[in-house]
Length: 409
Image 1: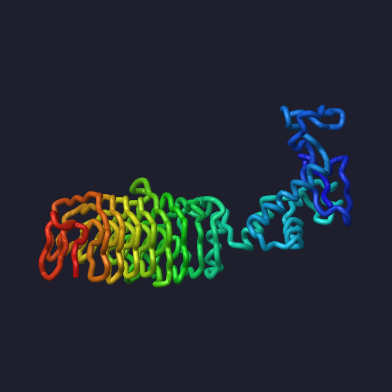
Image 2: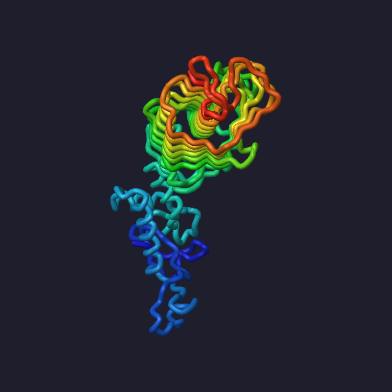
């Protein structure tokens, strides 16, 4: 049974009680309730008017429906919960910082706490409501998870440590992960950076990123680093669907001052399937750069970039594209670049730059559209072509033919 508590977490004077007969207390004083419009408000019986059709009422008849409502919310998160399990969770998650008139006169020794009960269910079925729960994915990398609200990582940390490997599923439900900030240390041997390091047969869908800020130093012990908001690298069986990366300024960019890197707005290296995804963030660096992926051997389809992709001066051949920097046998189909492709400084070595793909060795490149723009500053180059044309069979094609592929073959 359910007893009624007051706003001061004391037992209401009219309530039932008993250490062995009353399971839990719940708020029963001054509870807003509907009330028949055609009945008089009996204030002498403790009914107090709010407005027509609404009153304040007291009683265990007010407390009990609150417990029932929490049980219904729990079932909305996990329809497989049994009545026994629902009761157990409600009893285990009570607030015990209450008056002795509750603590000493009920089975649970406390007052209902809806938030704690729902969080317990969320922990059990993969629902994520806090940055800490998001972080805890690393403890169950084969699990299935879903966001129950937008998550602000800054509430947990100002320097996120990537979840190293993930085989499970994450459904964003359209909610956002904000303030993903990573500063990659110079002494790390880790190679993959993002919310996840590696996605290995994982499934990611309906997820939004906001305020991404990832920075790498010019010197790093890792031989090669892969960076993206979602993940550094994906496996061939990974599927990413309807995932958006939003950035509004340079401070929200993926910013990499490093030559040996693959950097994408979404992933560093894609070997799986990316579909219906969008990058709106800025990507800066000196490695292989792309709005969706720095390098690709998988499939990227029906996706778009509207962010700024900016290549700094560099000392080794690198590739930059609005969708993919370096496509090595992958399929790039029905994508759109509407972002700004930029070379910021003088280039003294080969630059393979295109508004869709920087360097395409082989693979499918069909039905892609480009309505973005590009610019360069004081460049020289050898064997490369800057933002315009394709390279095929030893010949360059000029901008008025095709600027979507920087180099072919």
